[in-house]
Image 1 (cartoon, rainbow, N blue to C red):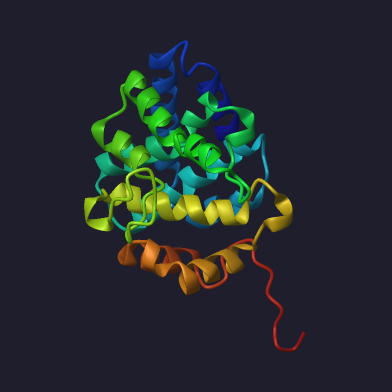
Image 2 (cartoon, helix red, strand yellow):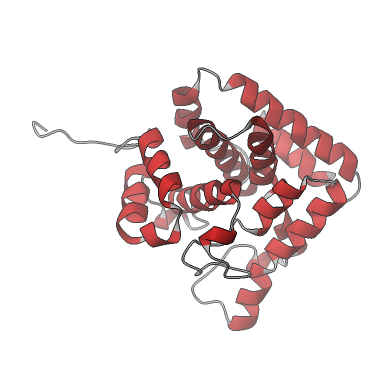
Length: 229
């Protein structure tokens, strides 16, 4: 249902921005109210591929962001802003040519800049929708990293809002598990291990610790072989 709702929001994004924003807010409020005691079920459902990749990724990022935000005891107003931002964080890609909507290692510098422009395009669309300042800032910073290695502004962690720390981490995790090329997909355990082993410096320490506690060493969807085979 959430994937279908997301697709409906995207279809009316520019022609009916107020209606699209109302749908997004209603969806996030519904998610928050249904997550009170269903965290494990919600995380497990993330392995079920429903709809197109944009819808799947956006719903995955939203569910995980809200669960992580709740685990970190973020205020209700921040949770709603985080949810809306997570749902709509890639909406700027609708304004990009198809060939640059997903990053690729063989991109030229102009193609890389064009891809990175989806962040600014998303903020522009967010303003037209009437998103809150916190939601807009979260979208603007969802590719920033605490060590300054992110984009578009290469700002460091002390300049990022808490909700952006959450979305930046969750966005990276889901892109590792569900990349544009399925051959490159990591299992949830592999993705979590890679982030912890090689990318710790890019993410907020408290946010990463809370994420690992929430997901567990072997996140739902992992396959584990025991010592007795």
